[in-house]
Image (cartoon, rainbow, N blue to C red; front, side, top):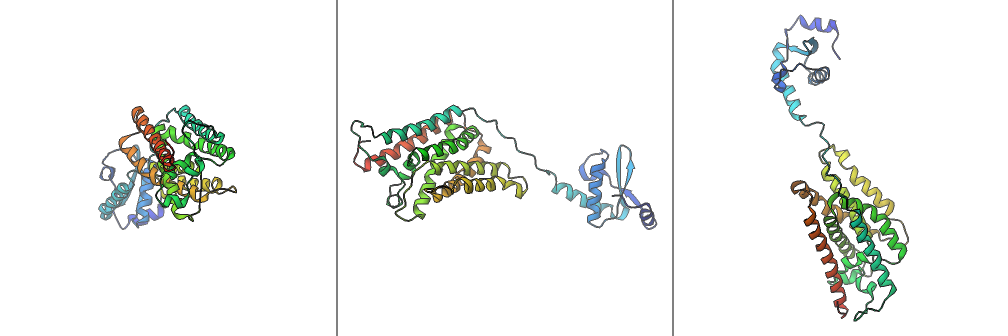
Length: 321
């Protein structure tokens, strides 16, 4: 991109050419390499400054009219300052945790619970219609039975409903647990899933009723999207929105099919996942991933939330919890 010899010769008749000292721009005496010199030449030409390159000792010299030296140095200094950290570096991702067995164990407990309540086994001092007590019935949630937003996550209409949530949700929940740790992941899933059910109950007709872990499954999708949105926030705008776009495509693909699909629960679970995952990743970047003890405590907390919700559900029916 150097100007022609005749063009330079013509300019030499009218001005005195001097070299831009590299140290004035970047504080070093290192000669300019071909790529850097060509970039600076493009910057100056784009701003209307005449310039050309000449071979120098160990590199290239960028020549400008002597009366425009200070202005050219100022322009290049501003350019270097604005692009100091460009392109942004890909953030370092913490290594995945190996806790797949723990995640599968929790999913197995969900399946066992479903089978136990479906078998209607006689338990001492306990007679309950689990589906009636724990479903996310909109009218009852609005009347104050908030725990239904939690208990509904553990109920499923039939074994096909259960199998679908375990198969699809198992993939996302396993990956999320390996990213954050089991305790933190399940805590976020329970809380985000409950908030998704609460929002769905308030925006649906009073007669709306739903069950299933799919709200938490799509909360996992939202959390994963939020983690990547925060993690890659320094990338260009169109690239940093890729995780959210991919998650929305997944929501459209998996969350809108089926005769009994509760699109509202899926959508609000996804939104709640983003709402909780976004600040969670900011805090994790600042304080780090939780350790083993913290994960155990968080796991116990999410278990306590679930047990408390079911205790309240059984208490309202006048059944001992």
